[in-house]
Image (cartoon, rainbow, N blue to C red):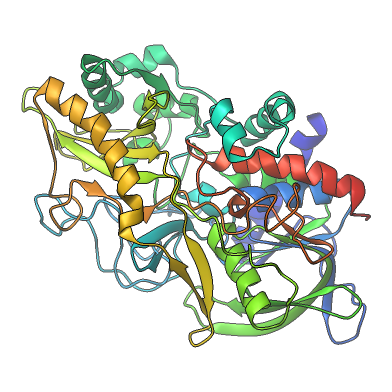
Length: 541
């Protein structure tokens, strides 16, 4: 751990240096990872990691620790602003061009209040931190930048219920996961818990306490949820000792302070090995294999306005796909269906699901306010996962509007057996998703069963004015995309892609559609487990 701490400090210094200099190449080493060339015409790295989210960050660190020169390719930018007084990220209540990935307007999940278009804003297109990828019937929120989804999520670091983990991934040794890899992941991610004494007295969590009391009236239990946001920092925010972040409506467009995103943990430590380089604003467009078994990536380098700067070809021996459920699956589908990697199986693209995500809200009585000051970081959830008919784990979410709204908002995670299938559309050179709104009905029914009970006991009602139309349940977007390259089907039991040597998936694409809680701890722990085996059996420096 002392060595990891030293490496993390070296990596943080490298990130700061790159930010100050405005560099798109981030390295703590004296030489770039991708300069040695087996041929005169092509850049080369022994290992390439695509993406910089949870699974990718684990791969980068463990490869770097093993002495393997590794190149990380991230399509977003480095979100580190030099110390010039300007914040890195914008808040939810005052979004600007930094909020969204090349959009003319923000696309927040809660889009209206009283059917008034007062949430979203017109913005200038820019390489912003949050993207909403839209398919018919389903949109998916993903993070863009060094750290991937860790930049834009609520940081809820939940270990799944063991029985459900065993049901979802029966080929994985649960004893090993819960004894070794879940603890390793939570330690590396910097997971901590809110002080319950502070929680009970803080005005910023009144909204959570109101929902807890109403759930208790219905006989439902709540659970405190660990987080990667530094709760000690949050208490100092409230005391006015440090700049506000979670208490200043910062989360879905990034946190300026307090949050232990991957650029503060795994990625910083990876850079500190002196074997890892991160190239930002680099999007991998395609993958092919050479006759000698190595891989070649076609990469588009852009600037923050979206202008193409260069097209590069990069070769590698070991290729780790960590671009998320959508990104990793799309690269493999394109490679299979264009003939670049024709031996990929027909299981690629299958087993996708939105982790049963459903957003809903309730209207409280005027005498039961939720507070105009609200922490943007959730700390409590209604836990009804043991319900035999409709299991639900419902995050109690904030509505940090800066005014009293009397709204209780929830992101419900449900158990939905429905799965979607990704496909490659040759005409548009893009990935599509075979998924219909009807497939989310089991999730809607589960959420409705839970919140009907709460409304009935408390004499409250659903809000129908928050999702543009009159729906009480938002079932057309998700934060937790999972599947597409399922472990044990599209890959072996350690993420090795069937049909190709030295090709790996190391992200949420491995998990078949659902894990019952916020998935990033599971993705991280599974990547740790898989990298242990891959490094021992497949990779040499």
